[in-house]
Amino acid sequence: MNWLTNWVKPKLRELVGGQKDIPENLWLKCDGCGQMIFHRDLEKNLRVCQHCGHHMRLEALRRLETLFDGGAFQTIELEPSPVDPLKFKDRKRYTDRLKDAQGRTGRDDALIVAHGRIGGQPVVVAVLDFAFMGGSMGMAVGDGLLTAARLAKVQDAALIVVPSSGGARMQEGILSLMQMARTTIAVEEVREAGLPYIVLLTDPTTGGVTASFAMLGDVALSEPGAQIGFAGARVIEQTIRETLPEGFQRAEYLLDHGMIDMVVHRQDLPATIGRIISLLRNPEPSAEVVPMPSAAAAEVVERARPHPDDEVVEVEGEILPPEPPSGDGDHGEGPPRDRSPRDGSRDGSRDGSRDGDDPRG
Ligand SMILES: [Zn+2]
Image (cartoon, rainbow, N blue to C red; front, top):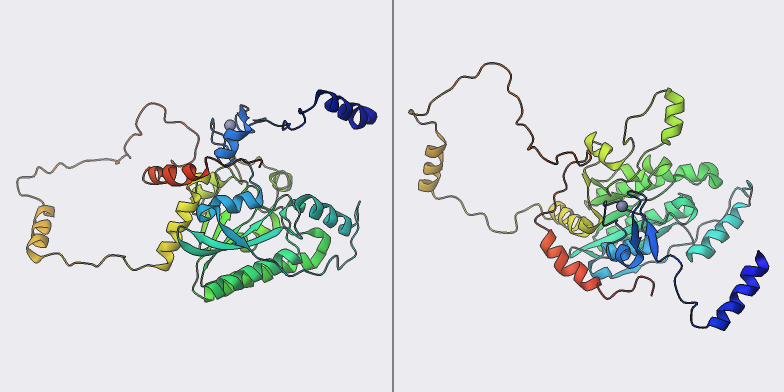
């Protein structure tokens, strides 16, 4: 088939002329509901399916764009790390794998560190790029996270880490596992400086990354449906010889079981992160606290007191929780997303500013 694609196809294109700029994937199929989505709609919707709300993976730079105010941020250059200390080779040399990934992604390793503002608050954001060897954590990522933590300290900014990773990079052996301790120390440095450290877990976060900095956030957020765990579900099932519950290792399941604090829709992430940082950094109320006049206070207390005419009914037996409202109450298991107060401002500012963007341009 090679001569067909390499020789005949270009010749035909030349004959037809002007047809070669049509992108090949105008329509994408949603993994969640199977519906076809037009690529422009998908990009406009931050790669969230408009039919079922399925969050598709986001490219690392696009992730930064969606988080920072007005999509404006500066990336910093990370120091080069020693390459292939173990001279590792499996089916392929590790150096070849690295070159491959560097060629495809255009960056040296799996971590990008950027700084700017979210919700008006100064932040340093470190994002793992899953496209670079599965976002795996080797020495370069460990170094990068330390750099990010120290930059946050210098800038007196919050540190936000966005993992999407298969875990430690096995090609670096024990040296990659040591990064679990190093990144933990990096997080500790931020904490000692009294700065917030927030983790935004994205699909997938597994292995040594979950076992280190990804689970140490002051506040742990996650995108809906993200897979977060240490070992894979199949491995666990084979080890314990039991069937795992539905939704195991998904963000909503972890929220229900207290492993993470919030599951936040992608569109609400900047506002939520901005609010969390503002709450963590300015615990004092922004307005002056005015004491209640004593007369008004007395009235409030008086009203709260039971009146002698109030009828007291004694109830025997068990008190049941109120029944949920009937109707379409069974939309999945996750808790309802709280998005009412922010919707207006978000639609006005973010989506509006993005309208003209050409995702392919
Ligand atoms: Zn869908």
